[in-house]
Image 1 (cartoon, helix red, strand yellow):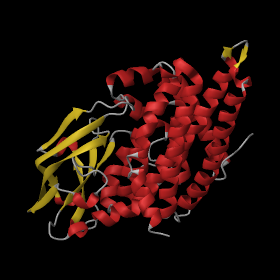
Image 2 (cartoon, rainbow, N blue to C red):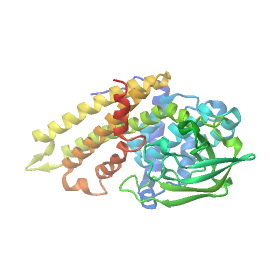
Image 3 (spheres, rainbow, N blue to C red):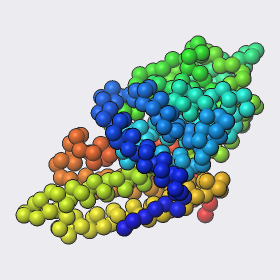
Image 4 (cartoon, rainbow, N blue to C red):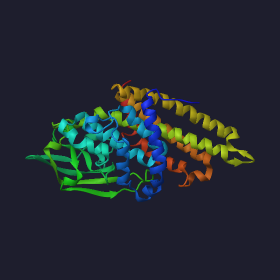
Length: 382
């Protein structure tokens, strides 16, 4: 069955053909090294910038391609297919960090940061989660105290994607301790120019080994007042609520692309692997499992495409994004489990792609707001 997403067009087809070929021939050979190093080389980011794969939806005046969320989705999908090691780091960079600067930054802030994000000279991260806080943004303890023309930032963050290599970090902090969520602001921390900012260790994870994940510490870290995102204190929670749907949709994009890839490689394996004198695809159980996985993957794809269309039009709402995030990532984990089972013992080997995808999939149900939080948000709409 051939299926082409409704949001695709001829220009994107040309871009993706070149992009996928570049990933498979030039960057993919480095994936094993990155997994071992727990880090992606800076040169790879610069290469993506040259390809136009970083911030492709940013306006041309700021160094982007002037595209739409379709370009962001296409890049995530192609990375998930060809080079999954880079899918999450780039999604954070493209679908989160750059979006905050574009939507809430002043013209001066956009000029200052987006060109570097688009070229790969700057790598972005966002620091919301704190030790003991999890998905509860209301429980933030990191403080930003105004001192003259700067803020003194104090606190710590954890589980920060790109934390080891980020040049620009969006930090959620309390600028008013008495105002609850109305006292949260977003500060842009430039790693090279912030005394008091320190990176913790590169955390050991069960999956996503090439994606660095860090603790970040702020001990009277110096942040110029001009780095307040949006120019007004107390807007951080509302800024996060406005852009979280797009972040969650990006996670769903990755989930569906991974499902499609896992069904593909498992079907290929089942055609080649013989047992009891015939390919295992000829056994009814194998065929039925893959038939179910293909069906659910196509259903996920159609719903995802509907959500992407809404995002392109600026109509994506919190409920639809929450449904997409929770349902596709649940199905991604189910698909990983069943496809690994069909690989038998080989599926448990790290050298097999399905094994790596199995452990990588599990975090999808946690970050971006746990799937339990997604169900809570959906329930509130009933």
